[in-house]
Image (tube, rainbow, N blue to C red; front, side, top):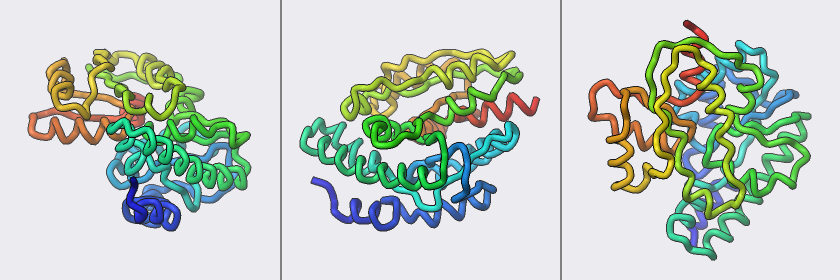
Length: 263
């Protein structure tokens, strides 16, 4: 059903791509703190630090600006969404979906215990792909599970930015085969709406960037050359799809927030 090496790599190294130590090196170079007693523990996901170091740089700037008490885990497990949950959801293989959820539970419970040992109150998720696994197993920890957008919305009182963007939070269609709990997209919307001068074009969230015909419709619907999303997978897909088009930029929420604060 799944490659045993993928499962073993997550168990042994925390991730199915490279090693967690590689992510730690990147994040420490940016300046993130690790393994400290703190109020919030940030879960990065498997490979976002490598593919989106600029986003993490702006996220750290925001955390520091608001003096948010955070830490990252010295060791972190991938939830298995990329190599296990997503392929199972796409093929609608119920046995594979059940097995991916079972493995995700194993992986995230270890992260719960690591975070609990640091005395944190909240587990803060960066990657939307991780969210189903944590939502499904939220009762396994006394800690509150929130998104980084929700954390920032507690502190961010607005900024100013003369910019027009197309906002695409993602469709989350495959996520719905993993969990029945709807994703909360209110926090990122509130953050963007609080930026003075920002013109937001809301893109059809029924369109999926992972389905070629719908991706074409999605790209054709953009009214500006600045696309903003909250999903790592969508960010990667849209960057790849818009690479050949002049002047387009794909950004995540921390980049827009930090840019609006600096003005």
